[in-house]
Length: 283
Image (cartoon, rainbow, N blue to C red; front, top):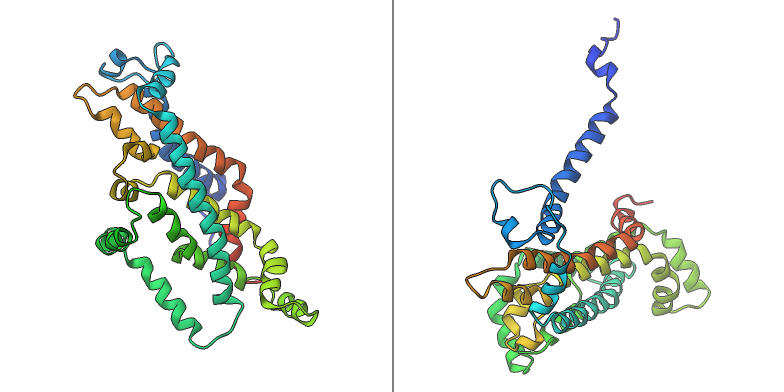
């Protein structure tokens, strides 16, 4: 029986072309908000109010970035964001690889059951826990400090634990066994053998944690009352306190806030992709 031939249209246009066109359209869709933000940041207030809006600024107003920085205590908010992001990222880099190692490379009674409970907490959104967490941190006298946001990072995150565990499971068990035969204890196996191999996964965890911490809004709004301790994510509201909102300055400040995260991802893109995809196929 002869094999049916593919339609002429499918034979003339390779399947890879559909994939490339789809990727280009997806990139345009996701980059459009960033383009509009940067475009608005370079316009004057009068040009922003024109309709229909212009696709490119009539004149580039780079002074908007200087005015945006001077409009609010930008340096103070930036320092607070850096402190929060650094503390949370360090906590995530220390706790999650260690916890995931216990759930993947060490056998102990009830391990899978406890891991299932940890994974179940993913379905508990932060707003559900607000009252309980606030009460705990208030009794510890941590309100109006960075501690309620930084300290929990040192106890692990379910998603990050899962990501690290999948990476560990993809590593051959013979590596750990050889180290134990040579006299290494369990912590030495983790620190000197497994952890160096898990650098891509750790980098992915750090990037995820940094992005989440840099843009965190609800937790600082809940725990901080002193305006001098606000991060940039909260500081943006000062552009909207008056009836006359300076949207060009708001967009300029938003562009400055986004740039560090974009630079972080570009710098560690290779490790990020390796860390996310390495545990998808067990070798």
